[in-house]
Image 1 (cartoon, rainbow, N blue to C red):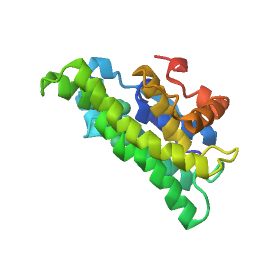
Image 2: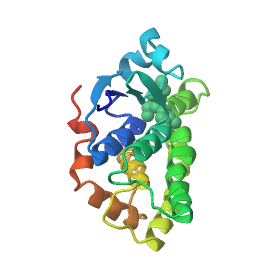
Image 3: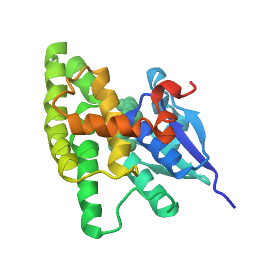
Image 4: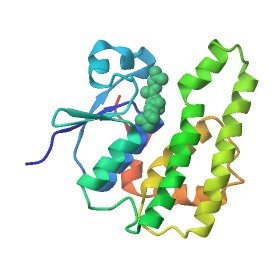
Length: 208
Ligand SMILES: N[C@@H](CCC(=O)N[C@@H](CS)C(=O)NCC(=O)O)C(=O)O
């Protein structure tokens, strides 16, 4: 019997966007429940009972909840072997994960909305300083990923890194980062965005 899968989602959350891409790549049917971050629904008692961290996404699988987008995607990859998101070899797997975690651990936690808001609202930084912070951390990580893509010819199958890269570049475009120093990233993101799994996960195509 197929599992009941519910994604607690918000269209512009890049962490939720990653999971939508992975679910679509695997061809998994799922329900979406909107947690409207603008209305602070992530802090409601109802949602905190599912995810005490009060962050999206969460994935409910037959009533069991998984939080953290990478944990969700890796669970999906182990549970649904079609369209694998990681290479077979242990070394290649670790190398690809390292790039994906560069986004998940070294960009997103420093540059997400709550951190940017904290800089301005609590630490009294101005908008210019906030943007300097944002650009500093994303450029460092994109430079590493640009070099990785250059030396690791990407095949025509989407992988774990793609599920994180596309939402992060979407976010970079929202914040008007100059993407010209990253031709390999741009090329890869153009290729991904031609695939229906990515198109159907795009924030602008989500029903709200
Ligand atoms: N490391 C977490 C990050 C989740 C996260 O930061 N989600 C953001 C949206 S991208 C959120 O829910 N923010 C709500 C808030 O800060 O109150 C993951 O990968 O799932």
